[in-house]
Length: 310
Image (cartoon, rainbow, N blue to C red; front, side, top):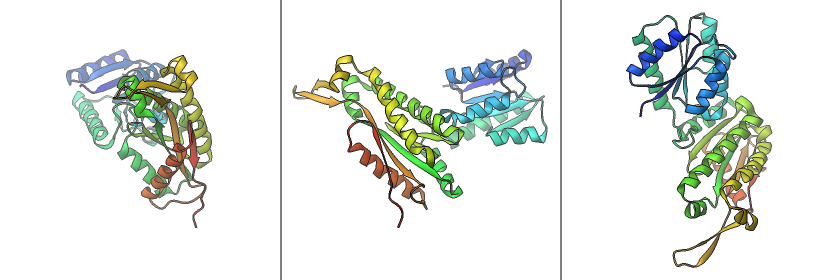
């Protein structure tokens, strides 16, 4: 499948030149002519890379890049600024936001293609993304946690997964199961954005397991909101009678009637508000233990480690 590139520039001639160059090279190209349209197009088509001018109508390119990097689910997307502004302070600002490269106009087609391919190659090599949710996968999750430990940040790790998920797949089918996983990803992403802002991180380990890394002082607010909002969202996947009963009726392989509880979410929290962690395995182990504690309770809930290190 061709990699998708979004070209964002308010000059139609530049857009056409870049579009033709990239299309001939085998890329799937979309275009936008201002900052607001760019953000809408990114949400619609989830490009692998955005080529972004700085001087745009409605929202300038720096603001667009900042917003894209703020959204947890878009951390695995490459961004290259393509601008006539080549001052060192412009380059520095772009790199500080988190863009992958900075190309100064005018440029040769071969140079553009080489830089695009290099950015996509880095993206492929360095980003481990969930194919279903598009969220960072295990490689990026581990890197993010290790960086927080190295910096000595005050953080909380939330480890979340869905309860009774296999029963949902068995009774509703894998397609519904995938939709529920996507709903969980949206809820977690929205919660982290709401309470942690650009300092938050969301990852998808795989299956129905997620993590979030965020400031320690908003951990319980975030977990509470995730549990409440997920229960609201998951109701759309059940019928009115199932919601009233609180379970799904089915038959097992022998034809005997069985009752499966509705899907809920459990959240385990490891936080530096209670103890400092020295290594990756330690913080993950505590979050896992707390998630198992949350699972022993009924319904969507969280458990936070309140033990102080001796």
